[in-house]
Length: 462
Image 1 (tube, helix red, strand yellow):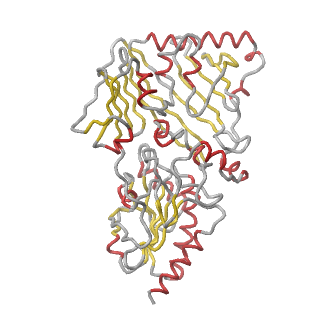
Image 2 (image 1 turned 90 degrees about the horizontal axis):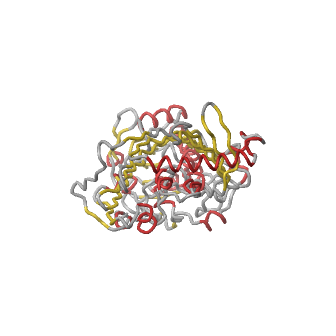
Image 3 (image 1 turned 180 degrees about the vertical axis):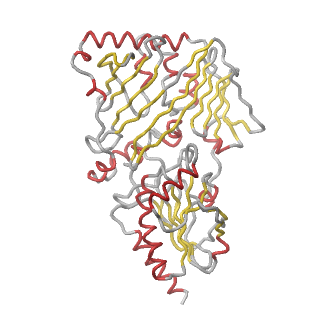
């Protein structure tokens, strides 16, 4: 499963598995890739960081089980909310029948819209994302997740991404949209069941919920609570509870409890979905796709821009001019004559949050010892709405003593050639790169390493 090239990546379904991926150094959390990063990872300071983790990488990754258990408190299974009567053969039979009615309701709707808001509990808090979907007559569909847009209309299927605005994928509709996605967009997954429900074969509606690495084999419970029907799906190490509107037979909520691939035994996390489906006779406005002067290509791979190599030691550091959270502008050229330490991070990046206290300790040391050094955070690839407010709230809460600059679209981090974060760059007084650190090593001493490299550089300068 290539997690960096699936729509599910733009959501947060890979957060769990990505934290268990192997890095260059044992027990080091990997640089976390943004939703739209290509699968090829950069090279920095002569070392290659891995591309998107394979299932074998995840299975064989060194794991500090105590640390992982602390990061992911064990979530209760949905099954714990179903008593013996709700798991009886009679209840299960009713759940199977209701699930078939759900699929029938999605098939019968002439047109349908839905906004799905889902929340993933991750180390340090929660991450909320949303998906919007519009389904018209026949195979017409438009689905938006983060910066990505999938559209099926007029016999063609289009895939576009705001971060790669110069190109879009266009392929002919091959029979059905589901078949086209399976043959032309291999590995693309929907973290919602709508399209699969609309094309589900009789008795196979349960397969519509097999996304995010889950595989549900049977209905294992049914109950009625607060005027809604609740169906329990059993996936062994995972389970899902569906909440169904008894009148419309459309979904109003889903709760997925899953164990990330490669996680220590017993570690589970929950993804809660809230749905708001609406049916209508005719979709207004109608589904359409505007190429807007962009170039059509035939595959997702052709969309990817040519990425530079990760910045190498000895290279001239790319310039930047960015504002901090208070509106002050920092320009790299104006800092010539000082050593500059730049740390690329994001609020959603677990390894970044683990590493930032080490950068803060370095900034305190610089201030206390009056070193000719400037320490800067650069906040990149922020997701969702109100990103500046989100960054400011986090920075204020942590009370970091060094400024962070805003590069939410990622133009500067891209110039430095990084496809994942955290990444820390030491820039010498002459504007050239002295060293690069990627990922987070919980057993390492990043502060000490940076201090030693800074003192060596100052000594070299006399």
